[in-house]
Amino acid sequence: MSIEKRAAKPPNRLLFFAAILLPPRFTPMSVRYDRRYRTLDKYRFIAGFLAIPLAFYAIFVISPFVQAIYYSLTDWSGGPIANFIGFDNFVKMWEDERFWDSTTTSLTLLVIAPVVTLVLGIFFAYMITAGGRHRKGQAISGVAGSSLYKVVYFFPQVLSVAIIAVVWGRVFNTNAGLVNGGLDLVGIKGPAWLGGEYGLALIAVLTVICWSFVGFYVVLFSAAMGGIPKDIYEAALLDGAGRGTTFFKVTLPLIWDTVRTGWVYMGIQALDSFAIVLVMMPSHAMKVTPVFLYERFREGQFGYATAIGVVLLLLSVVFSLIVMRIGNRDRIEY
Image (cartoon, rainbow, N blue to C red):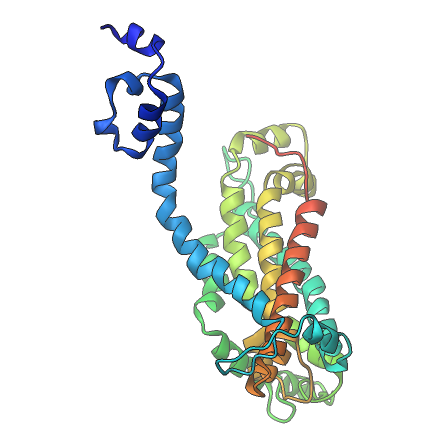
């Protein structure tokens, strides 16, 4: 019987469903050429590759989230017993002034740190990629030693966060710090950055966060800018566009997807900022929500601490959705 006749004759329904569970080599010929089977076989092939990764993702990522949501509704204190108490932990959180103080600080960092870091990252990346003098035959050219600058900017990324916090804690030290030492040289008495006013402590933390992450975005945005075809820059140059116009009309729109992704990632990093605040700041000076959560765990209030973690998860999701919504633009293909 020819292939055309086999394809035209519908296979037995029981045989058809049995063939779906069999390896392709054991599929009967009467089923193999059926159009419906070929469609299912395509998705079966894809599902076979995705099954194991999705299983690992469900076990090690989704499952902890589900467990955290469950324990946030209990009075779990670390033992084998966790009594269901509904939304009592969230009501307690709503009435806890310490939670709101820490959350206000975290939200302030969430708003300011990504903007400052991304602006600096885009500026330095553009200077490295297109800030040099126009060379013969090139529409744009980076500054001399641009590869070295990328390494220097990226260097904080290879350091431990704890080391960064300790070093910057010394820099902002009231009596022997580098900042106040420099102010003393010009006749200005340096303030207590870490143990004094809340605003000064916030500036110190913002400085450390931005310094530690800006190098990552310099490299990220430099790579995105390097992928823009030179023909586009040459066309802008022929039209008489200066560097400012080229940046806002050409470069920024073409790397906007990368900027938006970096905005989400940096917001999550700013919302965390656990190690920097815990190591660098005195306990009375300033707290962020992750530090407040850690202290509740240390006190044995595991259910309450898990509820705080669920709130942090929701804040991260809401922030990501807002950024993706606000930053949504028509995709530019090149």
